[in-house]
Length: 361
Image (cartoon, rainbow, N blue to C red; front, side):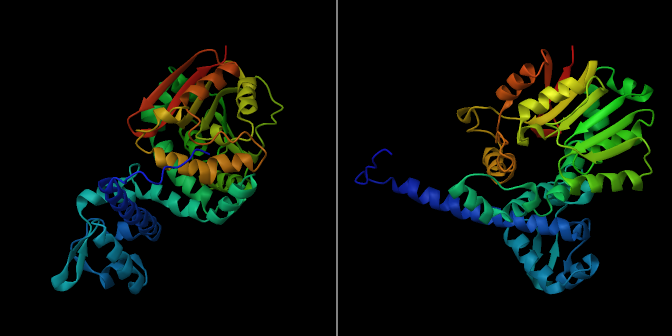
């Protein structure tokens, strides 16, 4: 450890600036929890497009307890999210804010993403333990992870499939219309695979995920939608005894948190038919910290990595790549798996991720 020069004079302006920044971060992070509650309880939706209303009126519209609603409104007013009129103690959600906070705003509902702060916070004590002892925290320890992930996927992937994602691979939609075999690895709750199965009834879709809870939700969704061309099963994708079977394999935001990502990528290459397509969505960013200093959500990326993506891999004795594994490493790993050529795309609707399109030779 390097020596610290405690006798050096402090830059008082810098001292004060950091204290102010900390207070700002405290308030903003508190609002994230309130954004999540506002989304989950439907409060933002109850306020959407409604004129000035009292806390009692808002609570009644949302079917909630007035005392809790009033305190939540206090956070929203002091956080400059909701307007307040003291004369009659009434509240209003500005249309400019509703534009980003309601279910009507999907797929651009930012309140969906606010849920991650609470989801990650539930394992803080377990994360402190692995800081001391090593190892990781398993998927099963995360409350509501699959629920929050499904909502996030609905916005970044499902809503953009036809207009933005499928067109990245020339001729892919036509192939799906004619009939193709598709595997979604790390399928989660199955929203993407079910959306594709509904749109392309001539194609057959299979989803694999390590978590039984997610697979149960995916199969339930397929039954609910009456889909006979989509099926899901619990499967560790580091152990796939299949080859030359699928025309398309998709991996939406899952490779970086695998136990053995190199084997997963090699297995994906193996299960594809010659000429088959691999479509991978993963985090946009660099493998080098110095290149991420100005990343628009760098702190969030490294936080969610510490609190989830890295630790769930380490819990399996895995590589622990983490969320910010970076595009450089991603490109090296897919090439090592056998994908000698790849096209990389960044889409306007999803600044968090990058999309890789590869073809098996």
